[in-house]
Image (cartoon, rainbow, N blue to C red):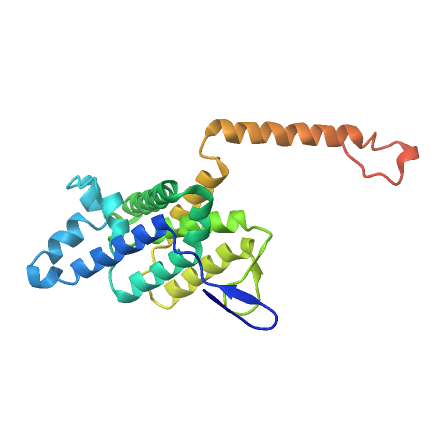
Length: 247
């Protein structure tokens, strides 16, 4: 399904199997939480299922890094998260398949949880108390946006708003919106978003493996040495037009 104008053709993002499973899960659990007040378990849900330092390390609710990313606080929270996941997730899933895609989203959510708890530890050391509890799938969704951006790094992307932009500019735009929302007083978890982003980048590039990072460094060093050798001696008067390299 799509629509077009004389110059550009737009197409709706694909609704793939894993993406559909995640969206249905978010919606079903959100509907269930609408009855938390009437059923009398609102306090239990927020303390046991939302991510918090107290829940993790005082009550040992060790499932919180998983449950917090399946729940949402209000309609606009789930609406915008679902919209972003739908916009970018299908293209990423088509590269990997349903199960690896869902696993990737959850792992990025865990990366977001790790970043939130790390900031809590810093706040406890500085001011004696952690930050507020966190809920939402944004960490995993930021991982998906990161994967999409890496795969489309130099490719033009049509966002159906304005002119197409290269994939590498999507992440700065999202982070800029985060800063704007925080400035406007929105309870946005920037550490959770950044944690999901970093986890997504590590998983897509393979840099979560120490040997991969070491191999890349060795390759960079070998290329640099080869470049230096090809440059000739920096004081050689016969090579005035060549770039100078120091050995």
